[in-house]
Length: 145
Image (cartoon, rainbow, N blue to C red):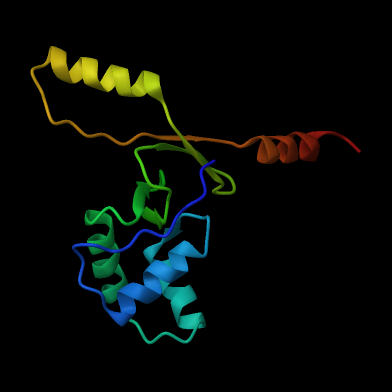
């Protein structure tokens, strides 16, 4: 996995709240919901409303400073990721996330777009499953002692 690097926030007006959100995301490897971010910010002593968190997450996502994924339950989660185009493997049990590159996916997306007359395409791919550690925990929990 590529280590996240702190990206400068360009094209996004810097505010105290936005900086606090970006700093918190840079300090964690987990994808977090807006509510989780809000709770952690409040625990750190930040005076910030949930609406402000949502608004700033949207701005940071649009500026491509953070990644956003749908977690499978309909909720968006956010994380500061490495630079460059990548995809994610996400554990449904513990939330562990691995950044991956997928050349076959890139070629497939380009091919499908071309076959249908599309250009200037973009895409995101998140693959949800159960990581090896959670699989092992599940297996050992069901075995008799």
